[in-house]
Length: 153
Image (cartoon, rainbow, N blue to C red; front, side, top):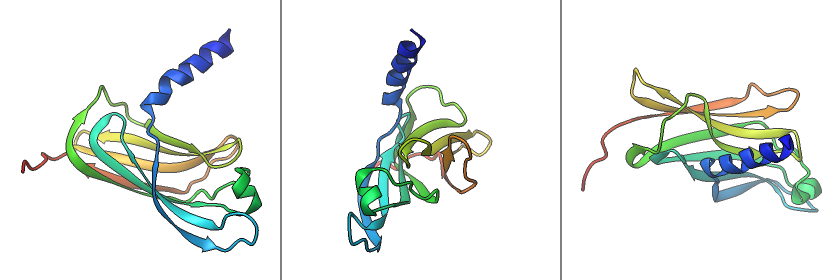
């Protein structure tokens, strides 16, 4: 019964997480068999903040394992978030709230983006990092967006 409750809870949370759209990629290592290693640029809109888009760049491992979804991607990622329209909030924001999450290995490793609200400076702060079930990584990147009026035009 707990398992069913947990699964239902996860399913309810899923719509609150953004999904990424691939903008482009570049090949970094040629692989004779399977796809090449590459750096991928993806974009996602913050699901609770209208008018904010984040761009991630990260490595994706190719080869046989990468092609089958069995490879573990590197922990490094870069993030840049920008105001792309008038900013409005869809509900209450929680500090450290997860806005994006993607699996970067078969089971144990994920890349996450969390959001903080710096009320003193009226700024949204986004942090990307990678974690692993047993041991996380200190690799991270941060970006910030001042909450400004959007020009009418």
